[in-house]
Length: 202
Image (cartoon, rainbow, N blue to C red):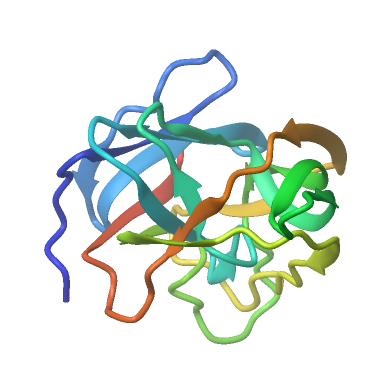
């Protein structure tokens, strides 16, 4: 199991006020506290090179594939439910300018349903899986993808909050084409796994 440490990467869970939630070592390991119904975002800081990060919350992937974290870091506002991209093609067959539309469902921490059933230890847990990157040729193509998250099932552990997706928001982006792009190198296990549990603040 990879050691829990923070080399060039840092992970902050940010509440409505804009400040990072204070982490502490509790019953479920590294943890933070929010009130029931608190919206939050995730900020990944990066003081090194390029990395790829997958995030799993309550056992569901936040994005369909690992996201690239550039040296300036990255903000993750919610679950990416749907992505549509449209790209132009240069004369040499490489990707030109392209447009991206994403449907984002913001993170909201809330109490799990307690209608019985086995305790689901994934509820309340945020997991970060970090990979090196490799560069591949950027070929022009249009595509549409969906991230089919499964809602957490079962009873939550005492004092934890699960995360649900809030009202969907449409986000548009525009990027210039590049001859090559970074992708996650998943041929080996992640070099870092970091876990945080979201607990309820009274």
